[in-house]
Image (cartoon, rainbow, N blue to C red; front, side):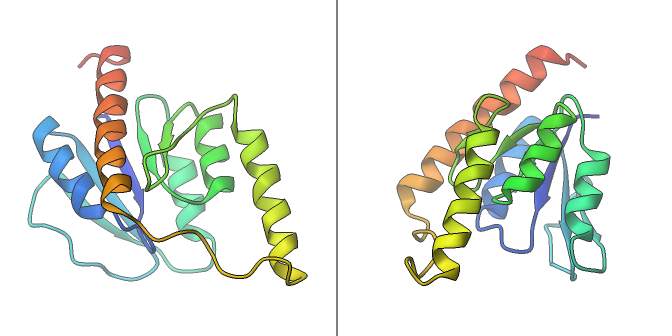
Length: 151
């Protein structure tokens, strides 16, 4: 069964994923380091894993062709793309094989700039426009997966 994996510890769009997944009757695995309340729905399952980096390892190991991964973690996105999963960040930006290298390089550059104090702070907060873009891109990804992997 095609699955949506959520890297859930800091994911701001879990409710949006639940809503869209219900419409398409897709399985959702919410993977986190600690328990999170999820809707009472047979298609939505909470997976609790312990340890630093274990969430990423679990998702990267289980995801594959026809799956969708929701994460802001660029190294995890790269690992999932290598396994032929589709990957979206919480603002609706898709990762692809064509741009993951530059995303990893930018992540490294920004980490260096934050470490030396040139840049402070993190990403901009979610806006309603970001949520809307995420919903549209998730819908697009689900339809592409369903066309590529018919039941």
